[in-house]
Length: 435
Length: 103
Image 1: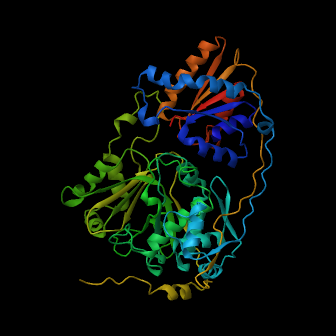
Image 2: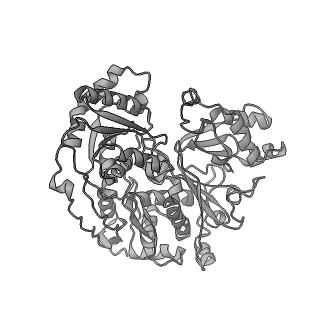
Image 3: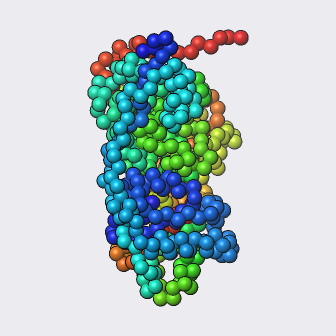
């Protein structure tokens, strides 16, 4: 859509031909760029996975031929008055206080407005939001960033409101503010991840002392439900993406199947039990800094060593890694120690994977003249190795089949009274009954 | 505050500035004798669709010329990449464009 707008802005009439899946998302994209009249023609050809060079020309022609008249009309039919000069949209006016009701009524109101995520929300009252705002020294009306195709203003207060809804604690607010800052960086390609069929998941990785302050699970079951920090931080970011960024499932989020990781996917690196330097130190931060990193995988795999020793651990990883993109390889502490004892640093692990991973046959260049679609193999710059989880197996998150994307890491800014805020919630941890 | 189980709640929906709106470009009166740009978004269906549309258009308009822009990057706005100059030169040289999203 944005390429179509670029052509229009150069004074040339254009039409986008797209799968019907993208019709609504295309409309939002066009409006977001200030050109709501962009003409679209949608086709009924199945998604790319059904069509490739092995398909018969007749099949393609059968899908395309019916579109021809519409395509020609889109380029020749005279403009309507609205297409020539779209009427200025009035700024959305929403009241700050939006509703009053009991718990069920609040939840149904929010759900009907498309502001919830299918699970009950905590009502964001003035009092709850004021408490949430103790997690930062930034003023409530400070705009952290403008997000998404809406360019929604992510004020500290709006972040806090969505945080309350998600069940987050005030000690999570610095993480959420850093998350918004990260999403606003072009390098995440956040905008493109949402408009893809790929159902990419924002995977949040936390490093530094804050993990222990706010009980981020870095160990067994870190990605399973059960920890407020891991659950609420990811959930809050999902609500922020929706309610501030304006990216809604089936509308601006074109993910074909969706992904449960969009509820939450938050992991802390187990720096204390790792034989290697933490990820944020690799990225140039100090060990005592606390950081948040985001990337967008959509393929998740778990594998086990095929044998003892480093090669027994690394070869199944090599076998599981698809040819390109960004990768997060998560190894438990015991596995990391074995690798380290055999001389493997994080970089050597990455180099081993890059050297031994095969490129998928479909994406190998047929000839030297054919442009390289993407780097055919994983490279060390785009592979992250973390120590977390356990005790066994290796977890691999991959995807980011897009060029121009990088991991983005943001340092958390903590309020002056951080120790006091942490102390208030420090003892909030589950104690499981024994049986 | 919860008074008698009543909650007065704040809106999570962010404000956004209105975007200045622009109209689309004037249309052609006909495609005959024109040069039509065909943009492929590097998804695998787009090449086949482009070739078919090109063929069908030329059957209908024998005097039509075409120019294909093959985007070698997925899901990017080309003018935000190092191919910006190449894209703009392509767009300057055509009368209209058909952009295929090959998903």
